Amino acid sequence: MSERLVHILIDSFWKILLPGLKMTIPLTAISFAFALVIAVVVALIQFARVRWLSGIARFYIWIMRGTPLLVQLYVVFYGLPNLGVMIDPFPAAVLVFALNEGAYTAETMRAALESVPGGQIEAGYCVGMSYLQIMRRIVLPQAFRTAFPPLSNSLIAMTKDTSLAANITVTEMFMATQRIVARTYEPLALYIEVALIYLLFSTALTKLQRLGERRLGRFYEEAGR
Image 1 (cartoon, rainbow, N blue to C red):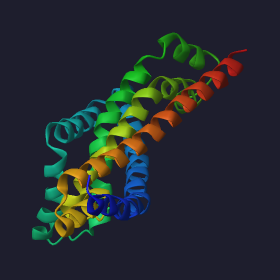
Image 2: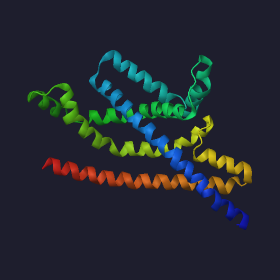
Image 3: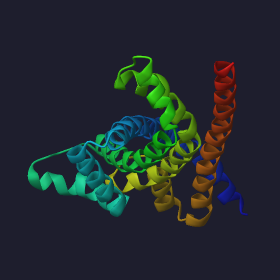
């Protein structure tokens, strides 16, 4: 490795990492938070089996899971202006990532809700709870425990998928790397460097996932005593 390349990698590290801290992480966190809200609402609609609402929920999931994320980004950012709807790059990315991830995590939440034994729901009715109370006190807490590992995996996947936001001019880590590559003509080394930074973020999230699973396990063990 030449001295010039070493200097480029050292100099570019912070120029890539800082957009990750300022843009990639906030984009992931905000999008995933909205995605969770969407997922819970859509999953509860399907769980309640309200016919026409369930049809809308399934249609939404079908569209979002059946079309590429990159195409969805282009439709919202480059396509909607033709209809007079102008959205800035960051909000457009948040909107698309939230809607896309919400469809996938809605299925995760639906499966988790259906894993709760029906007898517990009937027991809630027997002690005088309303439907909403049963959902809030019995079903959702157990469902979230079941869904926590796959939801954590979805968060890690979204962290990597935010690199697609560079296609709609969001200045996150991948776009920062592209700009450095255009200036230095060192694509191999720099793209490996940004891949390692993504790996660093994913590793940190994996550690947090394991910590969260252990704490959830202890919490439910204590609650069950």
